[in-house]
Length: 486
Image: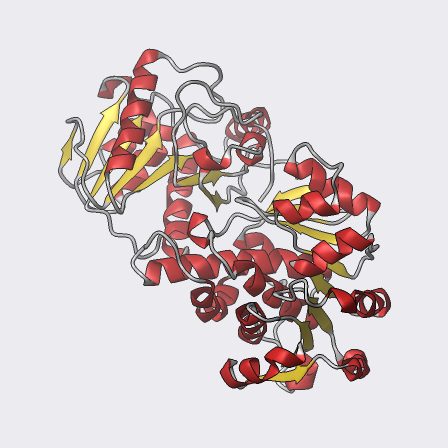
């Protein structure tokens, strides 16, 4: 999805309405319809059936989007407006009258299963909130905190968050999901804005003509669909890609197993796992039978020519540091994509390895600080500067992972804090390796891998009944479903 400022989308909407081809009411209907479609499509939200919808409405058309969306659920609605009904915008009043379920305006009480919708202010709002708005923001955040198994959805942008710089005043809505209408505003992607924005749900608005940002976009199904090519009917395993994985050590065989099994789930034709001799018997006995396990002997280099993508690092620990020179020789001479993760990155930082365009690096913030100790600053700046010095693809993990090379930068929107546990990075590395082996260029393999792992985690969360966290193994189970939706 395009990244654009609030002023840019305001001007584009004015030009659209001035042309007379679409009215504001028709555009609102289109937004509500697409928001409903996205809600039903996303694994994180498709299974949610709220017991009550609570709408917080301002005087602008964000309130109309919120009210029209609330009407779709057919359950009781509580309207908490900053003004009287007669002061709502004409389009918002029209959506209000479409609610046929019981409607009240009483102060809502905490209860399970609420859908709370923030339609107070849009992306054009600036400065500190007026008291009436601040009171409702406090009420909204308290209701969310005290209502288990409930979600807070912000329309376009969380009220109180600056659309351009991501700064918030004393009162900012803490959304679980933000429906970005037509574009994502820069302030929603700033470091530290994640807790207010939550999961970004991209709602396309092709009627509004915006100029795409030249070097940055937000990943969404409309962008990634078609990246993974359809397989010709005559394809067989050697045509779908062989992944070579160097992983595992004493105490960390699970990392190797999850990486290899994720590569299988992501569609690799063949997966060869090379592990230290001392853990070979353990891994061979427990891993899925589709993975071919071999001890990491010097002869493993002879298979390098038949591999379409390498994954190096999950769970190798410090025991394999003596093999650093051998691994460095492999990554320096490999012609295929090479995914470097975990202790491969730490070894690269210690020994000053150089990187090339076929290398995909997947550091978390700590690993990134070792690779680029002078980086500092904003995550986006780091993600742009590092590939300029080292012509690789960088996947900088975080609450909103950033994937970049010298030409392009993507923000991932999927996943969430329920993935904050061990093994998720091992799964991601295996998925990226499988996608690269199937022919995706490094930037697309890393981007689609991040997107698919997040979607798989969301599907696992929904299937498990929305617990606080889901395991990396559960993500693997849902990867085929996730890739089908990307």
